[in-house]
View 1 (cartoon, protein in one colour):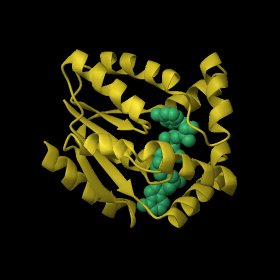
View 2 (cartoon, rainbow, N blue to C red):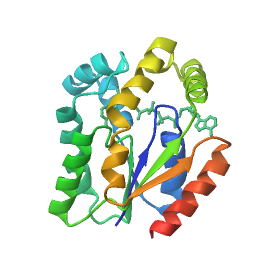
View 3 (spheres, rainbow, N blue to C red):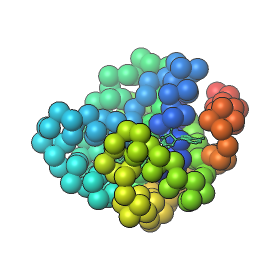
Length: 191
Ligand code: B4P
């Protein structure tokens, strides 16, 4: 299986590029953010818990998010591969993913990390907030908190994959098509 971790700060283009990748490479999309927003919409217990963290720009606890991944992998073991969009976001999540994948005889093929300047991230997210009404994209202080949480808790996950020789840095500035071209070249060299 071709299992790709698509990584980067909030607003770097993970969701946007995932849509293009799944079409071109016929992979299954797994976005923890989308799943959590679905739970919030359904007003489930999980959604209520997740909302209290997401509204502040904090990460949802590892135990909640890790619990969601095993089932998704089991459901898609026959697929060509997975795009993990927004997961793992902590080293504990990366370790759990490794353990679960080893049990199933599969592995992460590579981590593609989109690098984008902070001002551009804030600009993109505020624009999305205006267009979509997404609660965590409306307020500069919440967006800045998400970027801070990324720097402190999520960026170290790069070291985890770097130590396994699986880390690939991708310039995430430019048009969506330009960035997709860089991502496609990186994926082709993983295959
Ligand atoms: P996510 O849903 O993962 O959202 P995100 O990181 O904010 O956005 P993404 O990166 O996908 O958006 P994109 O740039 O594509 O997470 C939301 C929250 O859920 C987290 O803060 C956290 O609380 C929780 N969560 C999720 N996963 C978790 C986990 N594993 N553990 C714990 N908590 C978790 O899009 C941004 C905007 O930029 C769009 O409007 C897009 O159109 C635009 N854009 C994209 N590319 C562009 C380009 N090249 N030029 C101009 N605009 C561009």
